[in-house]
Length: 318
Image (cartoon, rainbow, N blue to C red):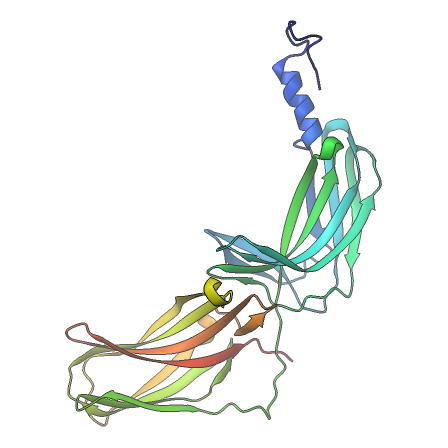
């Protein structure tokens, strides 16, 4: 950087030179990127992150993460650095209390302190990496895996680039595990009595929810009926416990007044809702995600009658 030769003398360099020196010091001129080794053939998914859609490559819990990183010094300038490193990180982020918890962290030192001139490329590989949880972008909680490329500069400055990737976990099908149909009777005394059933209590994310609703007594004028999938995200404990619900999907299954003895079929294709995730139980002691089928009846005075039933969602494995 340029400095004045005394406190009373004007600086010896222009503001343009000052900006150039600051850019070299703080890494603003460095361009960096990550390319996964099988990016052309690997499946990617589009996910909603905050207010935007993001395309992320998809990996399984046992997959090796490998590829190449590049670091460019534009215009052929020679840039000194204090080392280049690549980290693979798995972490849980809470929007509510702004805490970050790392559960996986590995480091690869790509270059010792030295100089960069033009483009430098470095291959990397993370084999046998622990990826125990599925990626998740929820209401208040976020679980993500990413690569963090860091070029250390003088005086503690650094240039950083992060590349997020997606991890899906699957559940092997166990035919011996109980997956009984759900049957319930609900109603309002002397006004409404219905019986509903769903064919299962556990569904994989590409399955179809099948069921029926039987009207045994109808003495109120029903306008329409809908079935909704409710996601309930909970985090924290004690006084810091939070629970938030979100309607993931809504499906009208009847329009008009039913009569006694009528049966209404239910057929809900889960594959049409990309925002569905598996049910998560106490992920790293930080958060849980549960799902409910919410049956709602609306009468002609817009009064709503509903009944919720918890179901278990999973991602089907081989």
